[in-house]
Length: 158
Image (cartoon, rainbow, N blue to C red):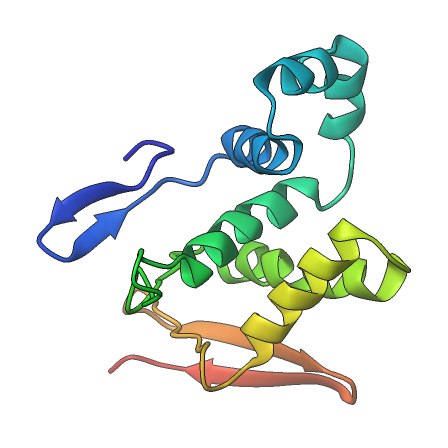
């Protein structure tokens, strides 16, 4: 898969989320100018700064998923019935969803806050979002954190 949505089979599409490409797509959607994108985002100093912005990669990747989830056909219907996000290992995957919440709580106003608020609303809406945990069949321990401490859940495949 590449960075553009590709039809894999009838009614099945896929895309590979690359942080640099997601950032470029997002910046072009906002700026609406390849020239401005090139001048700003292809500047070595800006690139250096962006590489060290915590959470930026996660935010733009989740932003791409969010964009496709709300994408519409010309008749106003949803372009995709279901959007699946295949995440990396649980810890890395969960950090992806923590970033919009962190931004939503720490950025007072603006486009980034609005986008983060929308992503938090989508990912916490039990009518529109769900998590399915998939694992290889072996003994494992999952630590689930909450506000009251850590709960350990043990699974053993027989």
